[in-house]
Image 1 (cartoon, rainbow, N blue to C red):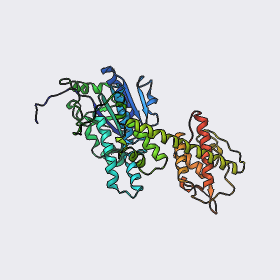
Image 2: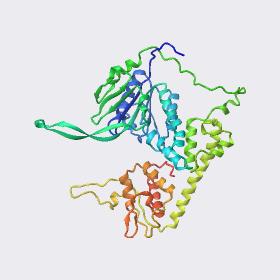
Image 3: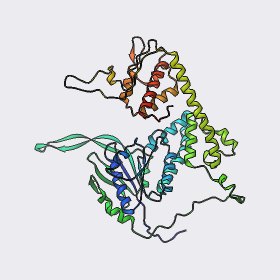
Image 4: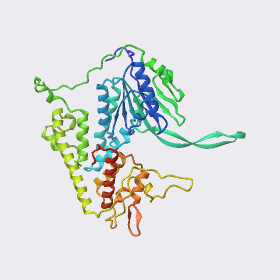
Length: 453
């Protein structure tokens, strides 16, 4: 059971933690570029920040591949990580890992969704979500190259004593970052964990590399990794990975070339697409009828061929649902009185020396559109649940902020006496249809090849 310990050469596992805007993405890309140049390899990046990493292309790093995730389920991360490994990328930057925990479709969102459907409780919900999260962490640790992950930290204010002139001491509030937004103890999985403060100072909090223990470096550059790379190269070459443990099973009949493809398990991308399609079609849980028909009890046990068969069916249903929604929207438009509408790109109110910014009701500040208010709005809060999701999805696609959405909603007056609508859930059905129509038009104007939903 016990053997002599041997020091093998390592691959870097680093986590950079800080609040938003403190330099995680920039620093992570600087370190990734340094590793790629030294080890003569390629960089792959998983971007969850709406293309933030690509803004540094050509300045920080000139050559890297990026995967921009739109759904942040741990299984989606796992699929992207394994895809990068299969592509031979020696350096992987994940920016950021926090979305897998608290992002759209992340672990917390999945638990909430499972509790809200079928009368589930928190225990059973976590029983299903935890294995997927563990698989994502294992994929990071087993990656055949170097991995750098960024994680957001929560903000908090503390009072610090500061000495002023005359020796007088005063308490000054200072903004500091707290623990990372991820599962408790996730940072222990990394060899180097460092924090960045508001002055872009990197502070090593936890490390297995003694040479950088406790270091504080302002705006760290490639030189910071010099002792780390030396530490990684100590020891002998790492042995090939051991085969995964496979429990004993009954003898399997011999497989011919004609039947071998039918025994390959479904890929993570197929499983993720089936899950998202079921959510789009409002199917409760997994497609149990489809699974039972094929003699399995979970999506992960499907073969690749079976997953392809299910996806063909689900894609047709999703396409049919989109056509039905578009048809319904067209019919609703025909029934409405003809009201001229114009669509423009979102703009911010402009200030001038003559006076303050435009008033909220001015056409220059309404955001996406300036369509008139219906003369007879229907019942408050009669918006359909799917329409509420569509409005929020369109705003995200168009990169509209909360202020833009608030201005659009405020134009929809309701009640007696009339007052502005405060949130999407309070919209009337007619108001929601007008907003969806204008947002769809704005989307097609900005992205002509987009597929409205």
